Image (cartoon, rainbow, N blue to C red; front, top):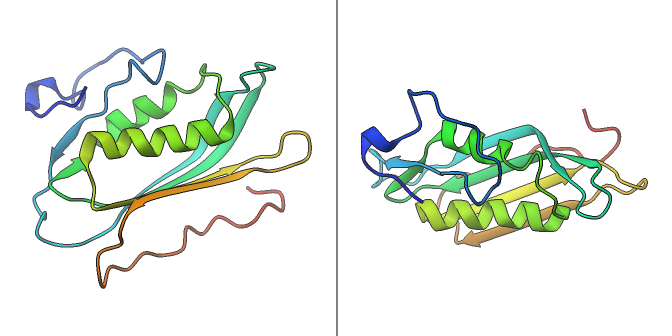
Length: 153
């Protein structure tokens, strides 16, 4: 459920925390620089969800990079969407790709990539990467900067 009218944005008002990713609202705002190619990065160093089998918590460091088109992703709504995963049971791969696809559906960026750098479960870290669209010609896309697992911190 994308909002465009200023009065329906979650920004600047108290809102209830969403209980599930499906009920979370992602807001978009017009991009005042839509004729310029640039990269936006959101860093989520404390992402949490639940293992769908054991119910135990899973932790990840997410990096979301996108080249906006006509719309920008509003950051408060992203925070609420991300928080809705705290009680959501899904595997690492599903969470990472679900987040990327939901953002793409809401804001239709020129390019988006998400890196999910998951902390170990059973001694094995799982890193999940998904992208869509093409990097605009000449756009600087820096490395995500999350080191391979050696006690990430």
